[in-house]
Image 1 (cartoon, rainbow, N blue to C red):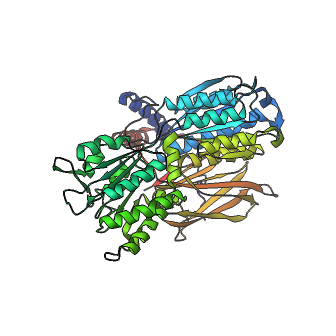
Image 2: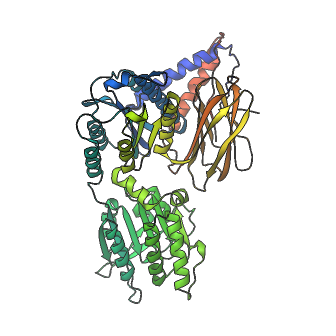
Image 3: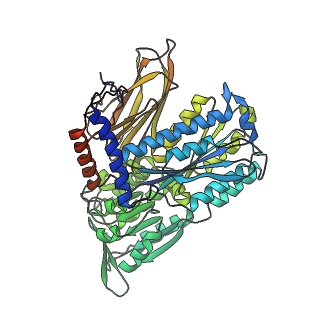
Length: 585
């Protein structure tokens, strides 16, 4: 049976291949030079993911630990993370910028944000241990550097082996971080619009929602009967947009004080950039009709930057809006996911308005994958800071301030991870990469012996997930990965929308727009010690579409140069086996 990423060991005896590679490299260089795009400049539509490696470089990093030196283990783990990031950037077309910051009694940027992974590896290797541990200074430098940059997603990985013994104390660090992260209030606009019909009054719904948002800490504006210009001017600054009034599948209807009927359509919203909009709720008739239609206003909100959009798929009335809202907010406050809270509202509306009962499927949440997994608190944490911090503690537990490291991570919705040994550190960095760019769906570990095939676990994929990513890591030797889709098909090179990029380790798999359902992951011991080798598998899904594909002109240029090289080059023997990247669409 085929193995994902298996090496293709056929030896090529054609000089054509060698000349093709040379000409392709030259053509790429020429194209980059002619296009005038610097390597770290991002184009519209790309997903910008920023990563900071915040590394402890204090004198204690020279101590022995887990059969080696702490600093060596830290460098090795950092290299593994860079390997994984570089692979994903090359495979799925996302652009990563990574920076390296070191700290001891002071903090400094060892390498500014770049997509040049060779420079990043040099920066990691150039960190030399010395001095005491001022974790607060390191965090302050990292956060200041992030806030001066532009990104869609970002995360900081803080690696430290000791307690803070310089600068701020542990308590002062947490107090400072809490203030630094919550300096800006979340903003919400609530609109009640009767659209000129005096017998339909949405003021009660709007006022209730406004009070609920204010009680949650939002800077809330309740706007009654306001027109299109006001809506379009306020939308880009909102974290929550709540509309109760008249709507159809791609239009929201407003009525301003001058009795001038105005509408906000999908095309209006498409022209806005809404990267901070957490939640858009359109409580109107047919707001979610034909949700797969690209013109649907829910799609438009999300495509313009909103995390989640909610609407109705059938005809609704204001009393139902009121009942829905009064059930939705208590469910949200209780920690329910967006989808569960929305369904709770539907049940409430169904029971309170028997004149026009609503079916359970009346509410539409888009994208479904986010709404089914994320609570509003999760979304608020992302919006308030725009990044998460993952802390890694290593060394003897008696010499670690794990409460501090856990507290730093918790304030940003991140996670504290203990690296008990060098291999565990590598796995931590691999996991953090998944946590920072998607929703973790499972992690599996164990030991595989020669010739053994183990079912590592099952990964659940939901309708609407943009991609499925799986990483297999192990200490050394050769371990294979097998993946089966929900219909039981073994994934191979011809599988639709499969992207594979494989180096010795870790093995990295991406499937775009995966089939919803359970995916089975198997691990195969190919060339391992008789006692077996440990393995680690982590899987995640993302709601961010793959972006940044190369332009057609570039692909045409490459094809022409490859054809010329293969047509004119003489033959020569090549002895090195190579690996193949498979991209089947």
